[in-house]
Image 1 (tube, rainbow, N blue to C red):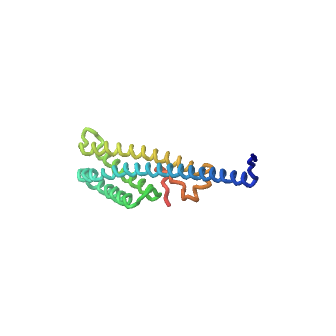
Image 2 (image 1 turned 60 degrees about the vertical axis):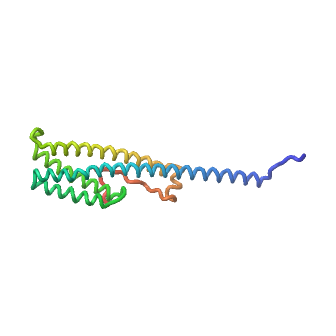
Image 3 (image 1 turned 30 degrees about the vertical axis):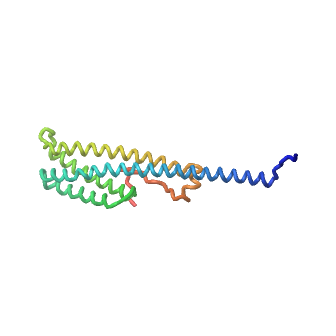
Length: 189
């Protein structure tokens, strides 16, 4: 019986096939990992938007408070309404949406400060204002929490697309660095 001895060409072909399979597996794993991280970023941005939507839903209560306190607060209410309209007209987690979020927060804060100045004594403050203030504080805290989770997801995603071997494939697959949501330093494009 003759002993089977693979030729050098067959050995080289087998090594090449194994190498190609390993590279394809690395590409598939890298791609799937980047997709997962990107989905995490999108999911957490959605949570930020839900929290801002809750803040926007407080605007009718603001209108009731404006009717109670009138003049100065009315102009602030108009600013909040305009900021809301801008925020709602922008989709996604773009720099524009983040900037609109900051503008909405600034307008809300100015209104809340004016109301607090108008009613410095909590016992004399109407119940509607106290309820609004509680909801505003709760919503603001929720937004801060969701912003943190979003930024954590962005950090994980940005790290993943910059690590080897992902960095070799990220650009080819269309994965670009995500924006951090830094309320103190908004991105103005």
